Image 1 (cartoon, rainbow, N blue to C red):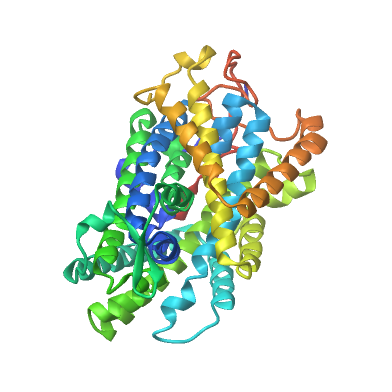
Image 2 (cartoon, rainbow, N blue to C red):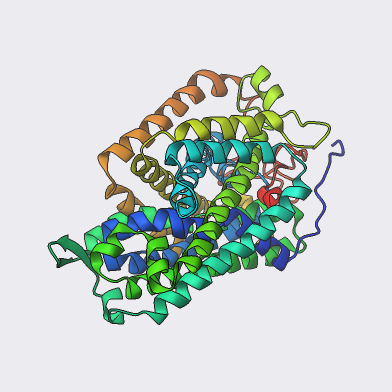
Length: 478
């Protein structure tokens, strides 16, 4: 077996948590995605996010177990592909690619709203400009980006804290509305939020909290990964959920009325609770948080595309281009452009369509990971050293059932769009990848996890050559 490059294990729990939080960018979800939830769920938004947080604990357990069992920077597709076969890994990669391509424009589309106190701009052209700027930043030295995104992350947390303080300081309704939610029905009337509506909203809520799972991309670089991967995943989920949920509760209780809450104008509520200066400060912090999120996501997502090219997911010429690393800045410039430029074009698609499709993709990807966790303890893999989740196999079974239920409640349009993309990807697998399985879509894992690519959970795992093919972690974003 030839010696191949190995990533240095130098990241602890604190470093891993900070890096993953930079990828999660919870404030951008709070200020861009949550307002749409207020429109559809009213005072039930906080309850829906809390339920999604409980689901995410189960998801975090699944990611923690698989992340230590198969510590690969390829993330979900490497874990699922190793356990359930190449086709399953390919479908998970496609679902992650949907998220990779759509989330940055969703976040960027909120920029103009929060720059409005200073300058009026067209939302779509502004979002496209932000993504193009993020693409340029993604082509530069990652050390400069790390400092920049770190500063922006601090500003995000400050903005969230200010909003939470002002909301709790101007409470207008009792806390009972959080567990007995209502929504504006027009003409000053309200109507109860049903359990079915909350279940429907779970896909968007999962999307709001999505990002904590990227900690598994750091598994190859973590000291004592069997202990630290799970801690990093769970700490990131806890902090990210708190940064989102606490201000959501404050906004819910402090909004002047249900109509204002449904409008989701958080910056306007801040100005009403304080003064125009504070409102402008918070708005600019939010705008910077969005720019930060765009930069981090373009960097992170380009690494996913880069890793797929090194695993030969595409025609040879495309793999060669996407896996090329620039000499000056050490960034995968073609993969960065492949994420950033189409993302800028997607800014001209309806926001609700983008959000719905992403929610479906996230829920489906989590279901695949839960399936992987369910089969992970069969055959030779059950003897491998790894962090093990509690309540197995009941927890992954319950998680799969709930996620399938959530998917069944989504709009026909979002299911059709996502299904069509997956169907095209399946056709690509049948016609191109499967006939070339000796040379293409060879999912590599480090020597710590010796299950060969495409090995099913019931087959014995043989030693496979280590490869840096997946060595493109999201950690570079923070």
